[in-house]
Image 1 (tube, rainbow, N blue to C red):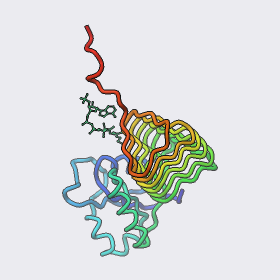
Image 2 (cartoon, protein in one colour):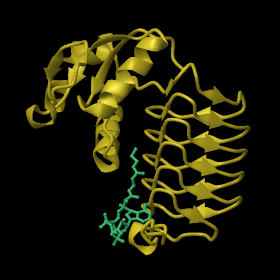
Image 3 (cartoon, rainbow, N blue to C red):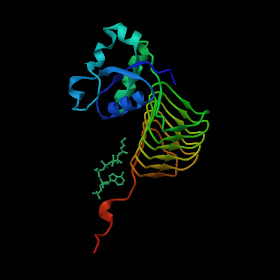
Image 4 (cartoon, rainbow, N blue to C red):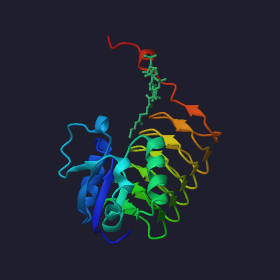
Length: 215
Ligand SMILES: CC(C)(COP(=O)(O)OP(=O)(O)OC[C@H]1O[C@@H](n2cnc3c(N)ncnc32)[C@H](O)[C@@H]1OP(=O)(O)O)[C@@H](O)C(=O)NCCC(=O)NCCS
């Protein structure tokens, strides 16, 4: 993790709010946020909206004086912004919440975030701009591809490989040594026991309507 200094956050929605709190908790000063007007919610961000992402290169002093972090929940947009930051020569840190447990042998790449309560065990690799969300668990030797989201409370047993730009839903469980392809989508609460090819979609089969009403 880079030594904290001044940080500009790309995005101004719910995910950006969480990133800002996390960054402040490990010592970053938030200079402000960049977001298009239609993505600015009524969030209490505690720092100004400086402009939108297009303004980024108009004022080179921003990139010289600040690190930058892509804080957009939607994976495709987050990845696009991360690539744009890298091309502009911006410094992009990784962020790890102080209440996360990350093995000293694990690697967390630039633009990736590890949220509160997450646990990352020995020799895991978290790719650039990936999100390990609140309380998610990665056991030993997991590899998480670039731009991928591991949603809150998901459990990846040892040696699970998840490709680039995939989405593992909240509370999903992936048994050991499974490979999940790039762009795959795993719904919340799904248990994955076989490899999944690229761009596959898997959702738990339980449906509320299949349970009889209480007498
Ligand atoms: C899978 C998902 C995308 C919804 O898929 P969908 O096919 O569009 O589902 P719908 O909302 O149309 O619901 C269709 C049926 O599937 C059920 N269903 C929806 N999601 C389900 C899930 N994760 N597991 C089991 N059943 C699910 C619904 O109850 C509904 O059942 P019914 O037909 O008996 O009423 C969504 O539920 C999901 O899991 N999203 C991930 C959420 C998440 O983890 N977010 C983390 C943010 S950080």
